[in-house]
Image 1 (cartoon, helix red, strand yellow):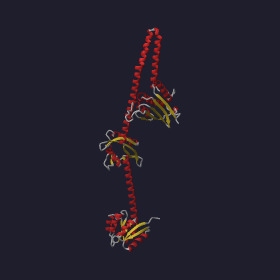
Image 2: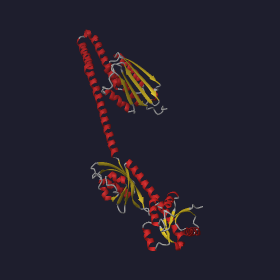
Image 3: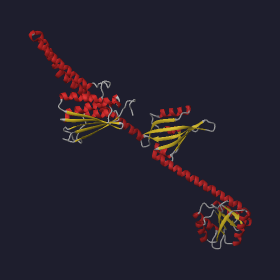
Image 4: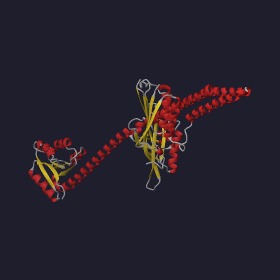
Length: 487
């Protein structure tokens, strides 16, 4: 069942109203009506009855059709308005239609009422649907424009036939073009590209067009404010009804901030790498200096003394055995010193021992020449699960920190603890030495070396210390487990 048409009839002659309604019924029009005879009732009906169409006489005793039309223009401009009159002339009716009146019907020819009424309703519906479609399109374009502006991303189309580029408002803004400048020749568009990148852009477009490849390109433009902006663009081919390439369409994005950030990160990475390199070179130089001093001041003197006793044994036959024995003692001391130096340089193969064994060996060797007491413990820790490279890193960190304690801490007691927490290795080394003020402490080569080694395994370090309260180093390393033992 169709919905009844709501008809507002502005007519003072009830006989004419009866004729109108009889004609509507003869045309099988499903309708409901409201009859008004003055301006007040007409205005009230527009607001509360809300008609689908208005049928109005041209003249009233206290009201007239043109006045009714003006009220309709103000309160219900989309509602069809048809004059039904016996006094209005043909010429006058045409003038009224030009001003916006939908149509007119002569009272002595009411047979035209139903066709004109249905046509007016149909056209009004089409106009309303078109208006709603345009409103939705405008809203979608507004939302798209906002989204593009937030993402600094616009869209564009290149027509191969006309060589014309059409672009969105955001694309125009990205290039620094005036608002509404959404159409230009491809040649003019290329003039916005940085001179050093023009040939590259042309080449990429031609390759995409000739080989039917998707377009993906980074380039620079010179913004109208004089700044250099970095642009990324992607494009795909559009084909006509015959399957031939008709153009390209795609997106363009201002990636200047991203490029600046990437360059900053790269610069920081290079600076960090330089810092690491300097630290490693400094450590190597210090190690070489230490070994050089050890060789020159200690081992060289021991060998010189051994050589002297050997010469004396050749000259003094009665004391030969004594001098040779003394030479052997000095040579043996040299051999032990060389062995001690080599232990600080070479990490034994894990096939001989593991990181736990090597830490214990280090503690034993240090106990022979230093009064520092070192305790070592391990919790929830299976050394057999660790990759060889991680074992080496742990041992080198222990070496480095123990050397820091011996050199700077003036400590009498130190504790080394090695544990596993899920997939992380936790190494804690603490001492009861002088400690330091963390706000004033400068990172030395030793700590930089430790941090660098930890970062190789996505690790991190933390330090807790106060003057006179000792020093604690905590190193957390991502476990690199051997494939056959990883659980």
